[in-house]
Image 1 (cartoon, rainbow, N blue to C red):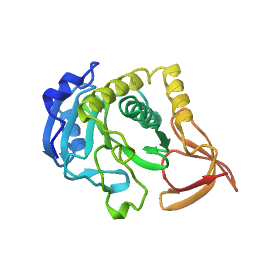
Image 2 (image 1 turned 30 degrees about the vertical axis):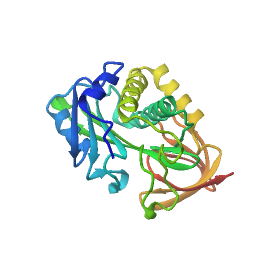
Image 3 (image 1 turned 135 degrees about the vertical axis):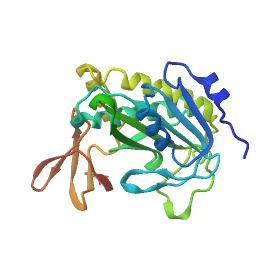
Image 4 (image 1 turned 45 degrees about the vertical axis):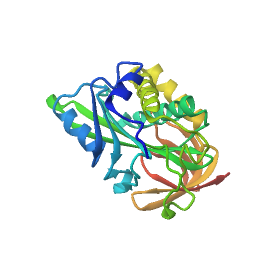
Length: 262
């Protein structure tokens, strides 16, 4: 499979400030690990790590992000949020909105968001987001936003059992360098005003419009406990409000295992 990614191709596709500086690898274990180390060394907000192939990418809850050489776009961006840690959930919402909108712009495909951090097409996962944080110099937090998009996969692993898809499987041939440029610009715009109350509210509004979860009866696993209810809304910090048999409950983290029309 001929590669459509290189440092020169990505730099030629950049349309904003983010992605400058850029570190590109033909192969790396984890773009998030590289970005975290770079961030701890002083990398500015918007610095990006991109790889043609990621051999040991991480997903949420310690999962491995499966990868086939040349088939995925693995990208990690350094964030330096001016938000209290209890509002970091809005970063996940912003990354989800940016990813969905960038995919739509480049591919023409309509994406939805599955709380807290999956991007889907027709109910199947096409991209995942992983936020990891560290305490930086002076006690200020630094966050790395890792995004993996299934771009060119034509045959997904059997263990994914129809739960995932790719842009190629959905009928769209996408250049990964162009998608990188679109994604970095979308992230820059989505994250640029999160410290402002109106900016965060706009992101939650956009995430709400893209949600495939709201209005659905869901089962969410939270710390090993299964919670059932109807997903009502997102909080201003990106949490999920559930109407359960015991009353309303706000989930700040968790994993939705099942959803169906309420």
